[in-house]
Image (cartoon, rainbow, N blue to C red; front, side, top):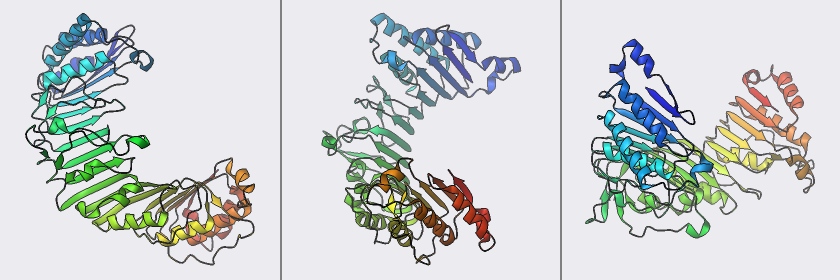
Amino acid sequence: MHAQAIEPALSIVTNIDLALATGNMHRIRRLHITINYLYDPYPGLFHIHAYLHNVSCHWQRVHTLELAVRGNHALTRTQPIGSIEQYGQIVHTTRALAQLVPHVKDLRLGGLCPSTLAHVVYATVVREHGVRIKRLRSNYALLECNDIALDSLTHLDVGFGSVRECQIPSILATTLVSLSLSSIPLDFEWLPFADPNNPIISFSSLRALSVSYRSVRHNESLLMPARPCTLRFPMIEYLHVMAPSTWYPIIACSEFPLKTRNMHIDGAIALIQQLNIEQLPRIGHLSLNLICDDSHDMNTALDAISDICRRASHTSTVRLEVFNTSDITVTSTCSFITEVDIKAPVAARTVLAIIRTMPKLVRLELAGILCSPQHPIFPLTLPTISHIRTLSIIQHACEPARLHHSNNNYSQDSCVAFVQFLLLHLPHLSVLNTRQISDIPIRTFVRMQVLEYPRFANIELNLK
């Protein structure tokens, strides 16, 4: 069921009337409340409570409560904290609203641009349902909740955004089955999960863990928690780590079992290069999404990827995004990479080297090809059978002119010829995407060669 209060007219939009008219109130298991406000969430909160109370005194069968308090960013950013009286009104009304749904076990908190008063609403709801809830999901840090204990919680999902105070209630680490923390700082304190008398935090029942660190400035890249502790995950089956910096504490400060079922890592290639591979568990299923730039040698990066992939029984998606602006030299073979996205124009010979050294590649995205008019000739065949299914060459509109005046390393005719060459020698190609490359010669080539190469008829051409 959905109920929404909207300022300034404080109209209520809901589908509860339909449930009443059809006699289905007893079937309601989930209640979704949205409060849109400009300055103060209290009027909307008051009207929602009054409406729900008049409809049914107790929503006994509701187990899932979704609450979204949405403010105006320009106004909530400068909004004053509010008077003690205003604070008390919000606490009192929120508590009364929460008591209408006494059996909530799944609490989901969302919204946009919450003000201080909106955080009071969230904290009050958490306080009212804290003893019972099994699942808690919040798009924001749970401010004013650090004195609340959620001893029955099994699933926690919190996104902290950009706030410095990464507060959450006190939680028993031993009861959690799933934990997701998004946008935490590198020096995140794990104190809400800690026993004050024990430096080791054991998540003895945890099966799934997802941790993403927020972007940091250079001088913050080696931040450490003020009170470091050891984290133990003896039962972990799924691990997802995302870190834009050069290291991630969740790996460095944790103890894992000998084996884990799934692992997904997002971040800079330096994370893999600096990682103690032996510290990781043996992995059943591994996926990677890594970034490489001018500060990393491409071949060293490929070797590091191969090292971690060898710890896995199976690898699915291994994606590499390359931001190198200098010419790339690829000599190391990596038979694990499935997707490559190069964000700068590269030489045709580099494209061939990538195809040759990455035999499992199924998707290749290029920000342009450098084909010199002095050297437009390509090899007769590729040295390996490629499994590439999707090829994208998205040349920026300004690139041809810029490249043409830079050492004569761009030729539209040579570029078209190279695309035609790839069409002939990528037997599994099913999608070709190009931009700012002459499309008529490519379409004509495909049409004229379709009798000799029947597979051309099945290639999806997206040429702009």
